[in-house]
Image (cartoon, rainbow, N blue to C red; front, top):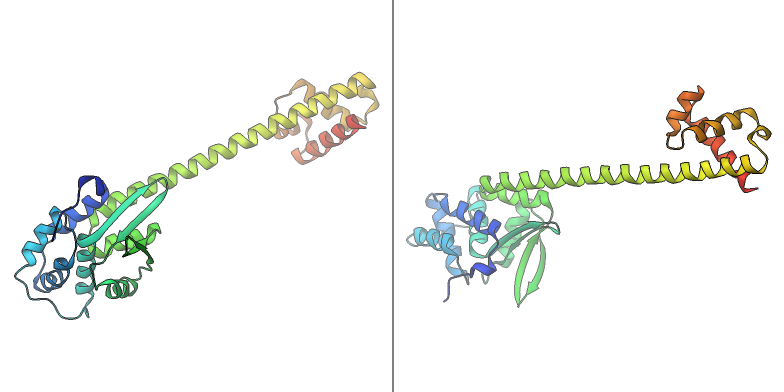
Length: 247
């Protein structure tokens, strides 16, 4: 049986998790769980092969009644056929259970509060987690604390960057709308001035029209401060001016 995975088929984050998990020294019951699971795997990377060698002499453990045994079982699942990738498209943790272990793997994951999705790839069942909280929960459950810290750091960084970009885009959109509205207002004031003069307007509208001409780039709040009123009043009067220009 071939036990090896090419470098191309492995992602750096997956290898980080496996390397960290292989450094955890198994206690007696851990070794029994791993001895019952790892030999069933189709392919084992270098970290998993080292751990499988440590567990070779152990007697396969009893049913997974204790939480520590279930979490050791999850460690073995990932070492035997797991991968983790993160990026712009999202997070993806995959587990390919060894033959005959799919039902138990699904049950243990569910018992640990990790609702996996299931699909078939190349006639093998693949259990997947995509939600960032679930991925973090799995890393926490299997004891991959170093990788969990790196994962959470990247996650927070992406979320902060996303919120920052959203705020910048919102500010840019608001500025673009403000500039476009101001241009329409200035054109309306000039059209009225050329057609009949601003004196034909009621004084409140005329005052706003003159203020807009003097400060084409000013915001509604700035115009309101100069006129001693509110921006809502200024917005309404400018809207009336635009309607007058169109009639």
